[in-house]
Amino acid sequence: MTSTLTISRLTKRFQGVEALAEVSLDLGPGMRVALLGHNGAGKSTMMKIILGLIPFDEGEVRVCGTAPGSGQARMQVAYLPENAAFHPALTGEEQIRHYLSLRGESPRRAMELLERVGLAKAARRRIGTYSKGMRQRVGLAQTLIGRPRLLVLDEPTSGLDPVSRRDFYALLDGLAAEGAAILLSSHVLTEVEARTDRILILSQGRLVAEGTLAELRRRAALPVGLTVIPAAGAAEALAAALPQARLAGDGTLHLACAQDEKLGLLARIAGLGAQVADLEVIPPSLEDIYSHFSRRDGQ
Amino acid sequence: MIRRILSTAALEFRIALRNRWVAIATCLMVVFALVLAAAGAAPTGDIGADRLSITVASLTSLAVYLVPLLALLMSFDAVAGEVERGTLPLLLTYPVARAEVLAGKLVAHMAILALAVGAGYGAAALAAVWTDPASTAGLPALWRLMWSSTLLGATFLGAGYALSSIARRPSGAAGLAVGLWLGLVVLYDLGLLALIVADGGGGFTTEVLPVALLANPADAFRLFNLSAADATAAAAGVGGAAATIPLWQSALSVLVWPLAALGLAIAAFRKVTP
Image (cartoon, chains in turn blue, purple):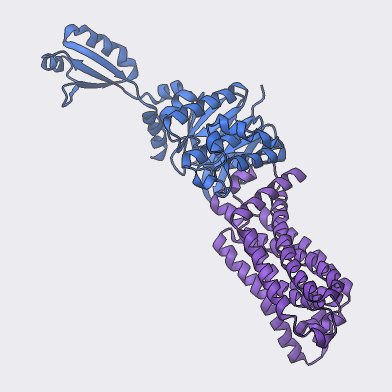
């Protein structure tokens, strides 16, 4: 299958400073990829290059087989900017009708799109009266116009409440199932965890990590945390049996071990029998993995 | 292409309606036109022209100042405002050419100007015909004034879009727009008058002045309307020069300037990176 988006050795400089350096990426139909990085890591710059809004210095970018920003590419790419903004004097419906016309679709479909993002009731109110989350939904509605083959979403869920976020990801799943490739950036790492096929981590313009969450987790090899809750009166004995554990103020014991030592340690704790009331295993969170990769490069 | 331009135009017209630009422009033109119609009533008997022709001459002088001002006020925000609101990047990812975006805005803003000019001149014409039935003789001149005013507006709309693209910030664009208005509409004529006085009927007045007048869209507009309406006698100042410049030359300037300004605007807008 041909890829929807191919980037090879992309480099972009702003007045001599490298904003992106030798970034390569391949995105096929139906793939959902999350782009993570600090502010200024180059996420928005990369998106703007893919959209053809700004030129780049070196490398190659192909969007749906053509140059980024060409008429052909723009027909097939939908974009949601960070903090989507619209003219405050227009209503949500008027704005979406206009976007439909620009894409050569019937403006009559505006209400249907606004219903899909849960904005039907406010459709005839001016955007100036909308909350940030509602403006973001107008932005989402316009990305659903036509059948985009590539969706570029810059922090799409900022300003959305948890329920809207879930609805939004459900929408994305539907689009991906229909074959759209999705590139999204986010700061909300935990939600990306469950909803994307691949994660890219950008740090100071360089791609420092790429892969599925399981791959990144393995590569980072961060310690696993264990919390042992002792049975009544057994705290002292348990602490003596597990000398590497740290006794917390609430009477629980905290341990950390490398991935490959995890099973052995678990067996030891299980062997302590009735002294243990409960046991929790805490794998490294995406936040931990993310800071592991982005910090490594920053040093 | 037409569909995208018309959709943009409809949207811009709606925005102008809600921002009360349509109301402001129309009220301004009607009030000024009626004041001129009333004031211009006095000298009718002396000149022997019908009342509407006199009014048209006065309206021409009014339009030279007011139409460019209205056009610049409506257009200075066109690109800079989109940049500031953050709406431009999204718009430019749509399959719409930058020229189409500007053309859509131009259609909407020209429609508003045509509406304002039509209402203003129409009111003045009604007042003139009311008091002097012979004024219907001046109707062709009034019609010419209407369409040429709209074209004058189009020139300054295009110039406003160009300045808006160059400045990229609404405050900067507003400053440039005021500067352009002062330069082309006020200072340009003052400068020419000073040169004429200094020249004393020499080579400058006969050779350079006609070209200088045609090169300025506001002066060309004034020349075109005054020489076409045979109302030169009723107008003073630079209007006197109208007699020496053929009508086709001023007409050409009136027609070509809007296209040139739009071309400049498109070139400037293409240089804007969102």
